Length: 88
Image (cartoon, rainbow, N blue to C red; front, side):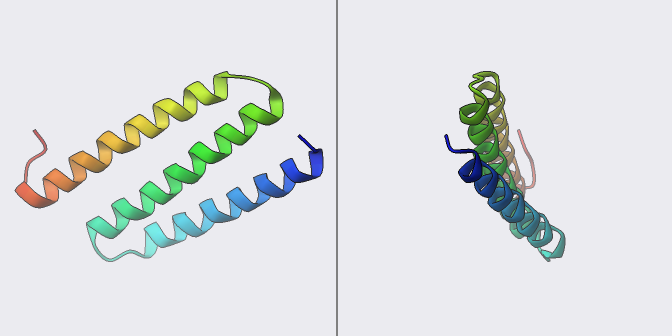
């Protein structure tokens, strides 16, 4: 991968993560905060995948997969808590 493209993509994802954190902190309801965290998590998974390709290391992909699965379970728990008032 070209080095300049790698740096531009990393900067772009970092900027999107900052926007997602700002969205999360300014949200008024819990569901909007969960949505903001989901956006941040998606961008972090993309950043980890970008690092895995740029550094030729599959360990970043393992971390991205675990982060994506944990975010999915957390979103399900938050949605169930909002709907039913309990997680389990």
